[in-house]
Image (tube, helix red, strand yellow):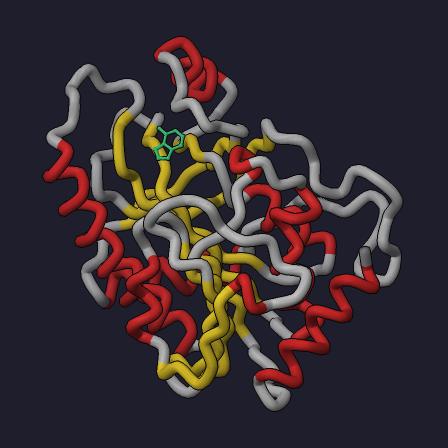
Length: 268
Ligand code: HPA
């Protein structure tokens, strides 16, 4: 496995003339537009990267973008790999390990999720302060000691310093932020009403089908993480959302998230 990761990293280093990104970014469903903020130097389709799985979900572009944001070198995944697509956890998290070998010192993650906290509204941005993992753990199996410890600590999983910075920036930019715990399930079904109530009872604020595996692997390698969930529906609400309205809210939230990510990267 480690050899595969190193091989892919070596391929990308050569393909990008040793670009050495400082920040890794994972763009979630509907949030790929952040790519427009990147002064792109190299864009490589996943299917042209040896060792990379290929994204199957519609609306996911499936490419790795190397470029500059506010003068900082970034690598962004436009489209990610989900467990519910049938990939193993090693495949889902493979790109994060590759990004670490390429040099990233921060990981920014984003996703679309369902609000469980009843004070959340569609279109809200939630800063992920912690998570609850309801998927298989990606670190099950022999430990790759070269990458990190057997029993990684998960305190401060979402970097407190980065969260504080986000709060300050959001105030300046008049962006409303929610804060909360992301519950990661396997999907692909959305939750039943009873499951949304269960997620709430165990301390969750938003429910989704991604992010947790990538974050666990990043923390295994001691990479600081910042995460944003865009609330695209409210699980415990009886209101059935107007589909167009939800899409519009999602786009607008994506624009606000782009401002936040951009300013945060500037501040690194
Ligand atoms: N549950 C799980 N994943 C999701 C949801 C949800 O309600 N909304 C968007 N992604």
